[in-house]
Image (cartoon, rainbow, N blue to C red; front, side, top):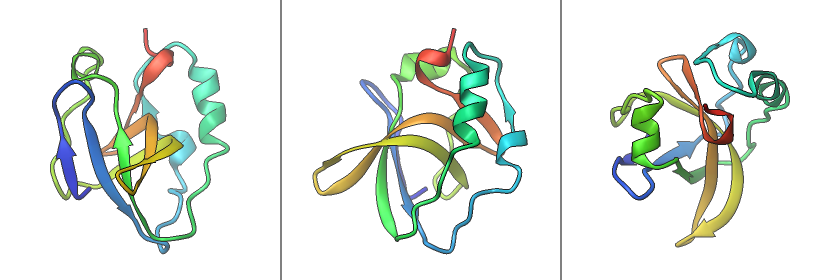
Length: 116
């Protein structure tokens, strides 16, 4: 993670994906916090693909209030962070994705409508 904006209305982080990065072999087994839609999240994780080109991503997160309510910990700059997300339109020339699952220290945080 290169930068982090951890305030409202929507926190976001900037990640740089390098082509050498591979999908973690334990992705489907990683611990996720309990949430509604666990089956659909597991199905989503079984279909994840890794981009094949280097690119910086602006990763949009839910509101800070929601993140705090769900117990999502604030990651530190330089800390390895994983994101499963849906691509969106570029923002200021930067590829953008909406985070669906955020991984910090191998702890998975389902985001969005799957949360109670």
